[in-house]
Length: 418
Picture 1 (cartoon, helix red, strand yellow):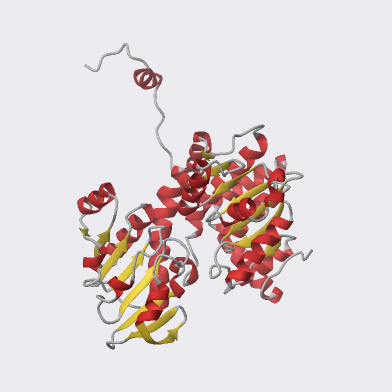
Picture 2: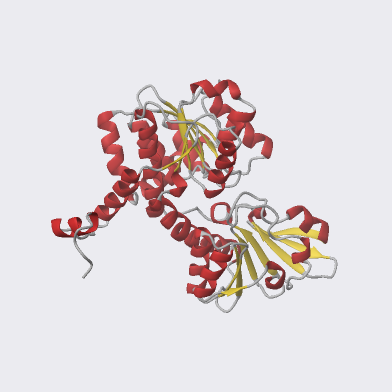
């Protein structure tokens, strides 16, 4: 068995510097790593991970290694791997199979190599590792005690598996922790998506009509940051509650068919397929920009865009120009993949500090817990609160504590309200 496969092992020295930089901005994980290095909760545990191979993920891997784990890692997106980081991890005796610009075949080959290491615990970002084990590599199931899932889309897929009785081992939905989605999805996706769009295009956002498709936590973050850059934000939604919230937050809300005629920049963030389709592209302004920050390269109907185009050319890295039959030009960023990871570096380290702290603690929880039923579990409240406390402590922020009288008032019924 190959111990690893990366693009260029000579990049390792640069990768170590990247990991060092990220670690300086991830104080919560550093505290957890110190604890794990003393207690070794993962002795004799093999962790199989399908995550974005970035400098922040490397800090999580270092934390797991400090706890005694053996780690096999593959990338969860063909365009998100930082090749220098992958090379550095290989030198840390991590069985890493990841390089940027993989084909679909190569991507699933890497997933298979991780499974070859017979993981005890799985860490997933999008549920491809879990679904592959359940569908094609069922011989690995008896060895897996449990796993975690990082993303909204992945949790949705796993809940669908649970509903049909297909899920064979427990998964903790890290995505649903307050210290994950309130910060990672909102502040992380918001900032990194804008970062990716600007790196790919260097376009001015101020004064542009900026269409956000989907107003979940990721969409809220993107809309908030686009507004802060001076853009006129338009939201499209299928959920009436989220649409109402967007309207109350001061954004224009309309169907995508209407927004298509108005928007200058479009960002999908729904986790669903074919959000922007042929009939929408046919209505768009000349030189409209299309980007995805939701889930893989399925939210924008790229095949239909190719059908509409008479020519395609690459203008610059992560920026492709499609010329349509009527002469209009549409610009697609990062092949329709996650623009915040493919064209930028993903979430800032300070945000991933909390998300990966949940991953680390949840992994420890699975190892320690005797028996968990095969379903999607929430992150235990005590883990969520511990992560928040550690983060506040790292930020040197103090908060109040309830007095005994206040605790009594909130937990008994004898005292009246007046």
